Amino acid sequence: MNLAAATNENLAHTSNVLIYSSMAVYTLAFFAHIAEWVFGSRSKVGRTAAALNAPAAAASPVKVRVARRGGTAVLDRPEVITRSAAGTRDVPDGPGAAGGTFKGDLWGRIAVSLTVLAFAVEAGGVLTRALSVQRAPWGNMYEFSITFSTVAVGAYLVLLALKKNVRWLGLMLVTTVLLDLGIATTTLYTASDQLVPALDSYWLWIHVSTAIICGAVFYLGAVGTLLYLFRDSYENKLANGGTPGTFARSVLERLPAAATLDKFAYRVNAAVFPLWTFTIIAGAIWAGDAWGRYWGWDPKEVWSFITWVAYASYLHARATAGWKGRKAAYLALLAFGCWLFNYYGVNIFVTGKHSYAGV
View (cartoon, rainbow, N blue to C red):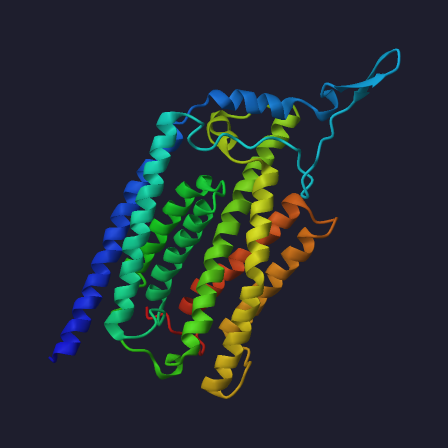
């Protein structure tokens, strides 16, 4: 065995150790997020619920004093209630997982710090995997999975760094990352090796990297959409005089308002959709170089196009008056389901030119 091969094996082993280490740190972050929700105050819940129950029509008028000669005229100006684009009620955002308390916020900060550490360790695992074979670490589903979760966490941390109110994503994100890495290290694991000839191209860096970025951002949009549906049901129940259960009062009330979640999901999906369009175009160009045709109705190509159509339909529906709120949200989840099937289903269960799952 030559020295270069030994070095590569050592780097591959180091990558595995780093990935498992990141899972351990993500687990600590998971428990810290749980503590954030558990120890966060529920004192603000009642106040926000009262705001939800108060109908807009009952809002007290605003007094406007107009000075004039001989006295002061008092006019009644009703408050203007701005409704969201989805047609949901204009209600305040919840106080967040920490509930505005010092103890809850402390656990939340610890959770974010652990997530940053886990992200750095996992990114190191992806980098050493690439260095072990001197190529892009996206040659099989194991490598795609560890890179996907790294990018998803990175996108979340970028939003936090931009002072966006997205810490409510933390618990679900960390849970999903642990699930993704668990599947990757047990079911999808493939030993570090060289690429098959069709993948040995500079287009691997372009096409697959953009696909990973799109999937990670689509995932964040899907989480926002799913939570929107729960929060919207909660707000509707309150508006109709219903009494939510304990879970709703302790969890859903702390989330941002349905309108906020809806806007978040729409914006991230709309922002990354052009990149998904470029991903498909780049894949077609790569197919022309590798196989002599730009489009051959391969299962991966077909489902990539189906995913594109689904997201295009969602964005069109979201901007159309007749498809607001929950209808558009269901379409968004369907679109993300198409992306998931394109990733897992096509690679594992369907045979085609893109069958590089390695499992």
